[in-house]
Amino acid sequence: MDRVKFVNQGTAIDLNQLPPASLYVYKEFDREGAVFEPPDKIPGGDVEEKMDQDGNTAFVLGLRNWIQLTVLMLTLGLGLQFYLFVQQVAGGGDITLSRPGGVEGFLPIGALMGWKHFFATGEWDVTHPAAMVILAFAGILSFLCRKSFCSWFCPVGTLSEGLWKTGERLLGRNYQVHPWLDYPMRSLKYGLLLFFVYIIARMTTADIAYFLQSPYYRMADVKMLHFFTRMSQTTVIVLAALLLLSIFFRNFWCRYLCPYGALMGILALGSPMQIRRNPNACVQCQRCHRICPAHLRIHQKERILSPECSGCMDCSIVCPVPDTLALKFPGRLVRNLRISWAGLFVVAMFLGTVTWAKSSGHWESHLSPREFRMGLMKIDAAAMQHPAVQFRK
Ligand code: SF4
Ligand code: SF4
Image 1 (cartoon, rainbow, N blue to C red):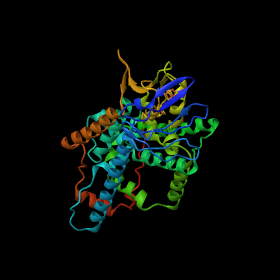
Image 2: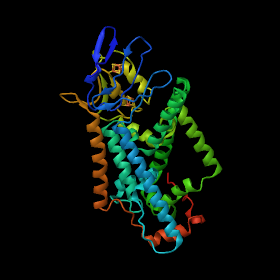
Image 3: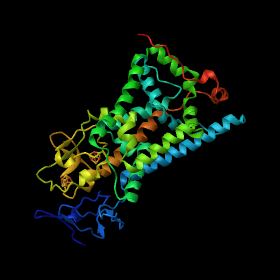
Image 4: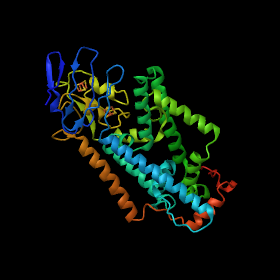
């Protein structure tokens, strides 16, 4: 087997010693003099033969990407099932298809209201119960593992990641917004989150109960479907602009605009898990910094506490020095979380949550097919507009 060495200021590291979980392998020629000669095979991972124009990186799908792709396919499948269900209900005949609860993952504002109502009254929202379950799953996962819902699960995050990686392949690089603009732009997502939280915080329990029972909220999933199937010209232009920007800039939507990600980032601030670097072992190759989708300067820190860290673990995978960079949780022993264990944990937590919710009646909407059909018939009526809730001061 080839011996491969990363040489930096006299330090030689056998890259065949990379842990078996190293499913990503990068070929690199360090511009600062370090030499990395890639092997044909590395234990536990395949070496991608393609290299970009600068000879910098080659990418192989890792465990996290497979989980992301599976969730994306599942989401598209649920979307198609919901579309066919709505078509069947609108057709007026027998209803044989079922309405997939998973589509309620796209109703996070309603889910936040549902949670506030639950904490005030102990009553679970029966109109879109799965929305509450999915928000709780995302929040708990992000709290436990550094916003990992965004990098392991979120289908929008997956699309975003696919776009910037495509851009990197096509253009040979990604672009970065200048710091003087980057910081204020990053605060946009927190501003949007604050806006929604402020609105919900001002709503009384009665206001929220009124909203959750309103004809509008009953059909909110159909309204969301129509957002995609009946796009206005403005929607098309905005989505096209976001798509283009996502090709040039890493995770443009997630980094600057997503209030859901902002909430996950705030929850992750309390996370016991952190990316930790051993400065004594670090050879300052900066591969961690270059791969980080959040552009974090990992090679200069011992702990990554930023709410922008999404727990993707890419930095720890590309680090050439064993036991130098890892997602760790503190304790008497600082333990590493290996990528395979992280994947298993994420999948098990998701399956466990959905199984519990389905078996305990916290997943399926209590809206009967007949009620759904009645709502669908009036979907464009004035009564289906967003209810103007009168907030009490
Ligand atoms: S590369 Fe490392 S520091 Fe950057 S977001 Fe992923 S886990 Fe966090
Ligand atoms: S911690 Fe970062 S800079 Fe240090 S050796 Fe690992 S990848 Fe290179």
